Length: 385
Image 1 (cartoon, rainbow, N blue to C red):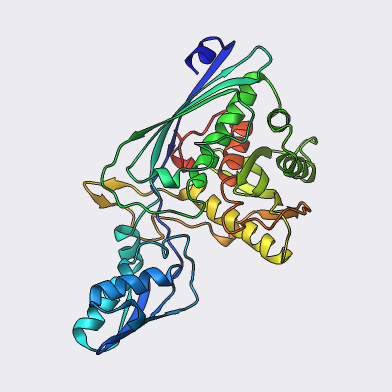
Image 2 (cartoon, rainbow, N blue to C red):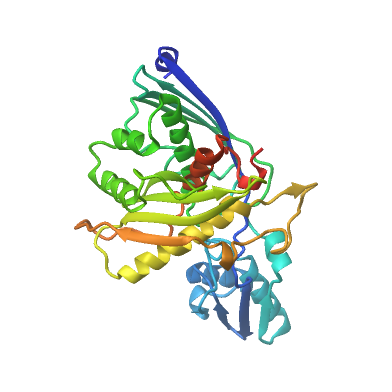
């Protein structure tokens, strides 16, 4: 790696920051529990009923088979309702002590200030280019909290691009802030980091970002197909409307390939307006096209929310943000037109719940670079100075 970097015709270096994020599900954390004698019955909007069952059995000293969990509809989960049982444990403990049914509903402030968060990371990247602008080496130093490794999987450990020399180094820095997976898991931030840096390499090589990616994914037909479809449907080779600019990003989430193009304008104060997002996706054999489209739309809305506004700050051990006035969500009037184009495939069905999220932040930031010439390396974009 070091030899490849030293021998490169040109090197490109950058530092990228990804912040802590809350899940901020629209339905606050809640659970209803009833403990009668040697049995317990629980009603919860959960992604992990078996986990709640085991935790309730532990708290109450009951066998697992004595605990019944009813899974209710959930107003958003995003992994907040998957591994951490704090809200359910509270209801179970109270019901056991009081001997009567108890419903616990957390306030918005309870959840944002006392929940678990997507880990923040600090990323030092360095790449070497040959005389034609092709990358010959890529070094990535990832600094993050203990336990974040399983959340920082695709995109840091493995690149979809053909780069001869690749190295990932991890440095553990754990300030003790409780962390948990977040929608899109590791790729939710790796998409921003990797695809933004690829755009930097394209710019350094003096090449079109779409054409540059196309060269690097040769031999991977599914990735190439979504990349071409997104560029074609977004009219990449044509001039965008006045004062609008486009950015592109590519990702592979498990067995699902996705490319997105964001069409953006930037106001005088530097804030963006996302007008249109074109998403091309190959998730293998499609069972229900409407579900695929809906999941892509929701992924883009959730990912845009984080890219534009998402950040949890810690001040003297306390979370600063508390509700939607200072932890903002994307509003209806801000939602762009989203076009979803499904690339036909005979491959087995792939995942859809999170696949379209990683590409939206870099597509947005790459479009903003095209508009302003300023590279965004820290999210959210309002704090990118």
